[in-house]
Image (cartoon, rainbow over all chains, first blue to last red; front, top):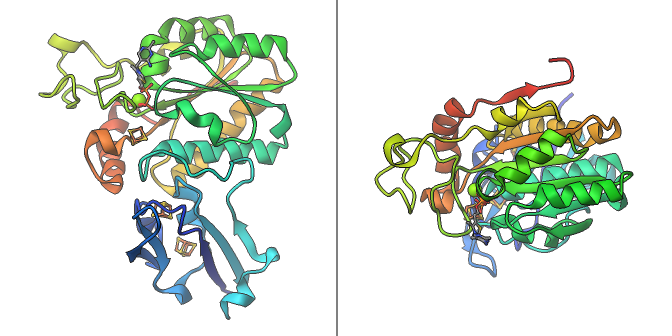
Length: 73
Length: 255
Ligand SMILES: Cc1ncc(C[n+]2csc(CCOP(=O)(O)OP(=O)(O)O)c2C)c(N)n1
Ligand code: SF4
Ligand code: SF4
Ligand code: SF4
Ligand SMILES: [Mg+2]
């Protein structure tokens, strides 16, 4: 049994601090080159298929930006 | 599996707690205040005590905390949160009352209120956010500033000769008979965040026992005034703050 995870990122609330990026065991997430309305380089998924839904990124985010889903397959 | 197949209510593992309001927090990117707010709000949600909780915000960066929690709140004068908390809890003994304070607030201007509320054994939860600096006012030295650490008011680094020793107020109040549970936590890795949340939950649940103050210090960052990126600040915290402010329980009911 394995897990496939994914995120819903509230990009307008993201401040691009980057602390979530290094908590990801599979390098799924990175800061975008694009910015949100506040001018922050927001978080995006760059390797979605590698997400295991561990929620590390969501648990460290100071701004509660990340929603995590995980399905068994 | 497609994204649509995964994003279903039954697969949800983490979402922003509705005990936080929708307001975007004013804290600097990566500031621990946000993480600590979230943990308190999650504990309130999980305990089902949203309509039974009263928070007291300090003066400091978290002065506007009441904008972010969807619970009743009072804003205290600088350092006076434990005195407000005392009154609120005594008048509403069935409510869960917590103070939220920075190190300048709790360990400098509010030292008297902190020590006496702890010594009287008020049945409240105190959350103490130690970032070793006055964040809000532009990074002046706090009682908790480490020796050698540079701030706006000790630009060459804190020295014993000029500035005295950093104050371990948590160790100090752990000695008082009125404290029931005293712990030091941090939020710079997911594992620390999860552990910190358990401690905050314990500190709230203890109010049911009426045994005195439950006190949670959270060693946190101030990347803006430490003049580092958020990730660098978390690294600096681990290397410099934790040797002087070691994590763990200082006083538990069993100890
Ligand atoms: C009576 C009074 N004295 C001084 C100040 C100025 N002041 C505002 S915040 C602060 C210190 C805040 O530091 P801390 O409690 O560590 O909170 P942080 O911003 O670091 O979270 C001071 C001295 C004030 N607002 N009121
Ligand atoms: S849930 Fe885990 S695996 Fe997925 S992006 Fe977040 S940290 Fe990475
Ligand atoms: S921790 Fe939160 S605010 Fe910071 S970059 Fe990640 S999602 Fe954005
Ligand atoms: S000044 Fe420091 S404590 Fe205040 S919000 Fe910014 S990083 Fe956080
Ligand atoms: Mg401070």
